[in-house]
Length: 219
Image 1 (cartoon, rainbow, N blue to C red):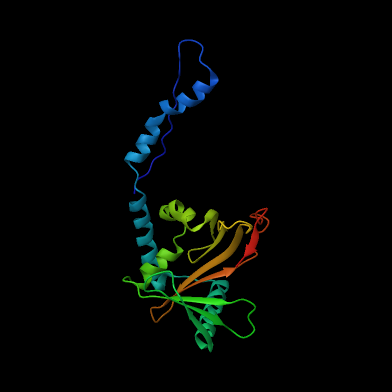
Image 2 (tube, rainbow, N blue to C red; image 1 turned 180 degrees about the vertical axis):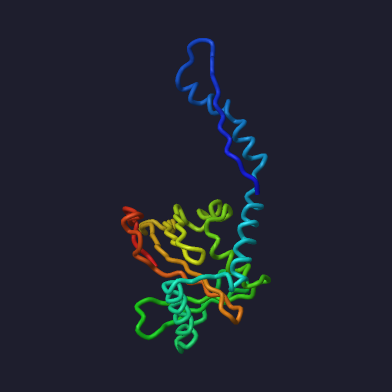
């Protein structure tokens, strides 16, 4: 999708004294051509689609993928987590808020926290599903993040297969502080065609992106 930067500079002569309050209100309105131009050529869906197709092609072609030892270790931990959930004998099915999505609570011996699994069938390829879940920098996510309580988020790419995702969530419950999650996300396509996407807690980049004041760290 072609893009360009537009910079409008305008000289204003009002012809006499005008209060500052009026100027600060009316000047932005006189520059509305920039807003109208942006709206006229708004292509969020087209740009997101192009990014998704690029991601899908990258995920599909395993020959071109190059993983570091750290990437492989992260994926192995993710697969171990999945295996432990499947082998647990303490599984409780709970009511799902979503149609055709099966939700279960899983208790694994030695865990301090409860695990949750969600399962459904999606009318899309594995590459399409994976690209949707890792395309967090999409314009659609930016517009809808607040709908699920996310008030701020940061994405920092490490390589083609791994990135950091830090976000702050406000649950809208009085007395409950905002929660900050700090994840390192790694994806890998297996030779059998399955795709593993691992979201793991991380303490990386605390100097560059410190925990936000007033937030509790969550997982």
